[in-house]
Length: 160
Image 1 (cartoon, helix red, strand yellow):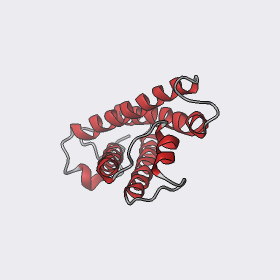
Image 2: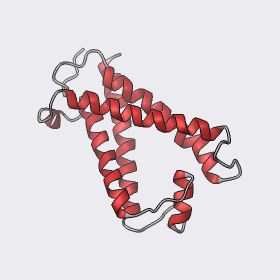
Image 3: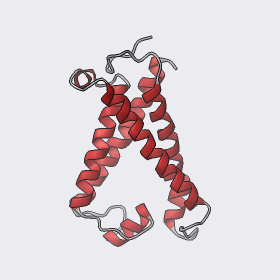
C-alpha cells in the first residue's frame, strides 16, 4: 500500500476518534446533545441504560485521544511524538484500535439482525446506517495502517 494512502487512512481514523473523544468530553460536562436526558442518550448511543458520568466518559475520551494519536504516529502524521515513543507502541496501538473498532462492528452486525435491538427504535437505524459501517470501515483501515509495508523501523517516518 502506498505511503500516501496510509497517511490518508491514519488521518481519517485519527480525526474520527478525536471528534468522538471531544463528544465524550462534552457529555462529561453534563450536556446530553443531541437528546434531552442521559437515559435517552444512553439508549441512542449504546442501546442500553448506563450512567453517562464524568467517571466513565473522561477515561473513554482519553482512550479515544490516545488511539487517535497512536494511529496518527503510525501513519507518519505526528513525527515529533513518534520520536518519543517506543517503536512498537504505534504499531500495537493501531492494532488495538483496529480490534476495538472491528469488535464494535461485529456486535453491530448482531444488532442489525434485530437481536437485542428493536427495528422501531432510533438506535437500530443509527447502528445500521452509521455506527456499524463506520466501525468496520475504520477498523479495517486501522489494521492496514498497523500492518503497512513501507513503514520504516522508525514509526514516525513512512518511506516509499
